[in-house]
Image (cartoon, rainbow, N blue to C red; front, side, top):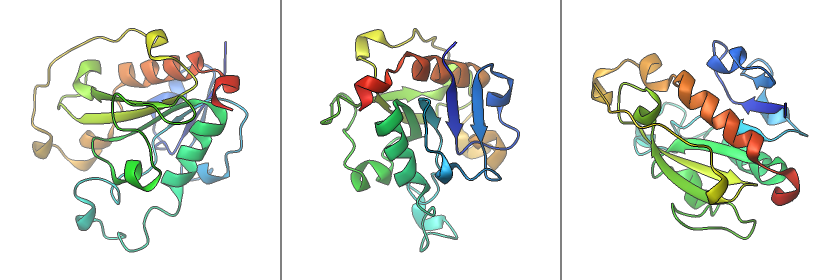
Length: 179
């Protein structure tokens, strides 16, 4: 089984229950991750999302987490997850959905309700190290609640099926393809 590093995850993350996943939460400081495994990166999004102006720490940003996550995905292969239209795409010159960058990295537009999130939660995935035709199969479900009716923890939680799918996707990534 190919090992995967889950970066910028919550301390109570579902990733802890997935075999072969090395979790990097705030205590471990994911900015220190330096390989060698492909990654599933969930850098903080509040200063990059469409409501960035509401973030209390908008002037200090995310401490370099987003940029580090992009560099880790590009170096080791894997996937970065962020809200649709995240400012990180512009900052790091990531390809918009349907397009590729100089490394063959590409962006997928997904909705987390496909994997059981109660809200639609439009999400972009930047993937390096696997062709689009090799992506793991995904299920489709429908949302049951508007995201604005949810508390922060409910909005932020990664659905277990989505986490397992992202790990499967990262495991399919080749470090050589990402180099």
